[in-house]
Image (cartoon, rainbow, N blue to C red; front, side, top):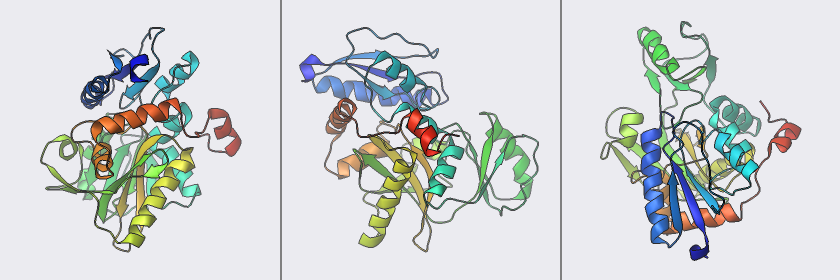
Length: 315
């Protein structure tokens, strides 16, 4: 089958996550060539692209806007070309952190208390207790993430977060163990615990080699492991399901997994967590890429825009 398929790896793009996307795409392209596929690489740096008519599949390694927000998926749907990851509608819903939280809350998932801020000059929100976490609602890879420990740090943190586009979601910081759960073909992979050596799990700690320790599988008892995995699977299904995702949580001391976000296009770099979890499950990087190709050609059921409107999840 590999000899007959020509795969386009989309990488790079123009988002704030371009560097990570280039690394993901380069690693994927090398793996696919090793597997025997015909591979071309395409960098839609200006948000525009043209596919040759002989492309059988697009392997998406585009992180951030355009690649993760449903835009490129929608264009590929119109072209009738299959692609890796989640559908256009699921991608659109999940990329917006407000959508993700509100939909998942309706399905019984626990999330941090929050307020949405639209003005860069807004005062410290009433009703939330310090410390706080500020998140641009339409960014990934911890881009624009800010932590506020004291009231005097609020104005500068808000301005920094707003640089990446508003609105900004402000959450009470949840204390506990930070973890992530990869989902592949509807099934959870081993849990990864994330332990920064210094500070919080921000962009620098996420992408600097050696800055963070990872434990896989995370050391939870069997009951809590199943509870966390069920919460991860339920979070993705609440948004409409998909072939592949990574769901992030903080597990409180009482054992409650608190949902942070759902990532529909997980990183595929040497430090990325989905490949790490897949390896623990017995899939090396080449096998993971092969599995993603197979899922793209035979996708699991995913939410469409029409179904989104009918089910009341349209924002």
